[in-house]
Image (tube, rainbow, N blue to C red; front, top):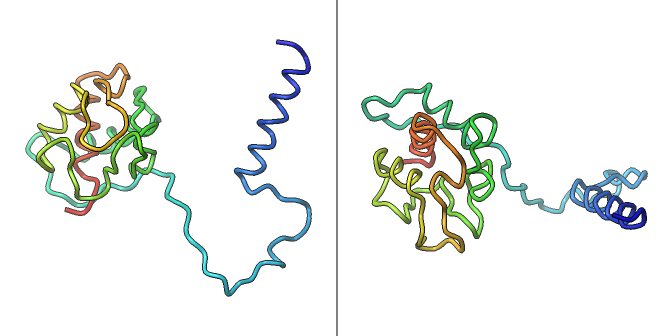
Length: 157
């Protein structure tokens, strides 16, 4: 790659970073803010905590914790967060896993979630993209079960 292309790419990424992070322009922008203007919270970017759902026999809190780590990519090579987001709130590519709507299985059922993660979703009901088996990652059977345990605990019921 030529030097000017590298410089241009670095400049573009730097500008994107400044804009995306709300880059400080050097003045005290907070002093100029109208504090009476309502604000909208940014979407959550962290994995939600597991809710208090009754876990099926053989599913443990340790599996849920491991599943959260795999889901977010923090351990085990999981890639779930790339389409579902780390907060599991979904994107046009993959559904929200924190609500009580189950699109590709009959409901909050551990075995069905394990099967869905294992085989993927070749023809999703609403999402714009198919989910490959294990989200395209190489997961062990234990990691698949852990992710399913974590997903089982998302939502409110």
